[in-house]
Image (cartoon, rainbow, N blue to C red; front, side, top):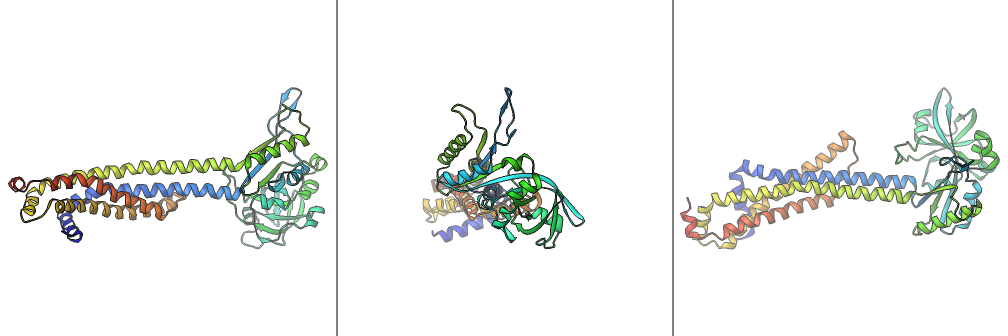
Length: 410
């Protein structure tokens, strides 16, 4: 008996009991759909983390002012500005694997453009900031050397600020006022989306650090050249741990910290934090897929149960086939093909349900989902494997029946 003949007989047998065949496939359909949807949700979460890594900046180390002690009382982190612009330049100059070191000053205030106003965050930065943070200028131009040396009153707007102040109009060349200081908009920034903490990274204005210090913030910030943070981008392939150690040693020397004394700055390797979150997303994806696979296992048990019932019901048919010349392997092939056919049809229907469910979840629940061909092939292949595994025992049992006893079966 050929495979083609076995498939025709299997399909004919499945058509005889349509309702039973449908109910048997239901477990496989639900299992395959659940696996595809769970993997799509997990892949979407992982892709979201990768986007956050890209938006934040790859191989990034962040330096923040640390805690200080005054009169025996330990202050909180950032209680005193202990980092300066010169620290940033020294890191760029003396640490061999640093690609870019960018100081940052931060402030908040009301921004006015014509009759519209918006409360936002502004940062004073240097040109290295764009390289360190992987931030691209969407339109217009960046800061020129004269803007930095002369504290030019120019600004770059994030997408949220642009939309809030100007709507769909072109903001380039327009004048805005930040803390009553007029600025000319020279460009807009490419969208970055939300940060890990859920903050809108596009609700921001960038200006030259000299402008922020001398014209907007003033006070001790201008006198001491202190900064609120330093972003350090490490060269691709460099050892992050070694670079961290070099930066820490350099800053301890510059700040004249005695051996054993605590650092007066905080050093954070953001790539490690995001890498750990990405690993957690992968583990969660595997866990979700494993849980969903239980439905496939249950569906396989259902196939075995129905195939055993089918063998019992068709015992006389099996005996008749053997009596006219069918061999044991022909009977084995016939029932095995039936089980595989049930699993494959269920797998294909489950694939359609899973793909549709993934799009529905992404649209209505607004969750990030990502479908990939590998997960679909894996789910259908697993369904076929279940058909072979759970269909083999009933098929083997049918092939070992004795023709005389099968013909006598009532």
